[in-house]
Image 1: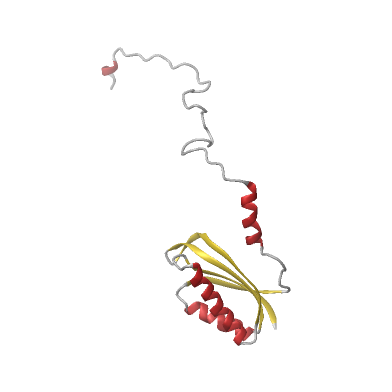
Image 2 (image 1 turned 120 degrees about the horizontal axis):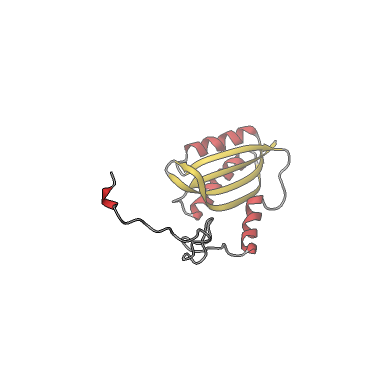
Length: 153
């Protein structure tokens, strides 16, 4: 039997308990066909890079397992039929990595970095003029010639 990992994206309007039951359903398909689940991780609701079937977000699930090719084909067939699954990808592995995946490891790092900085709706960006009243070193404005203003063509 070969080692595999599958990442599945479920629709955004599905609850996390429904995502767990979906994961359990697909894991049962693997175990019934002679496979063994090594680890399962729910990465949570994440924003998609582009819309998939009119969804902007999706629930990501990671499953690492050892199974025969027929079991993987059956699981993927069921994923393609299920309307709650937006996308899935299965990759064959040499070894199943131990510990958490990078997605879960990075999730903990964000909280250690502290909160994100927000400078307001217009502040802090490139070209910020500080207190907004200072025009910098542009110099004074030249005087207008108000005579003959209506004579222009």
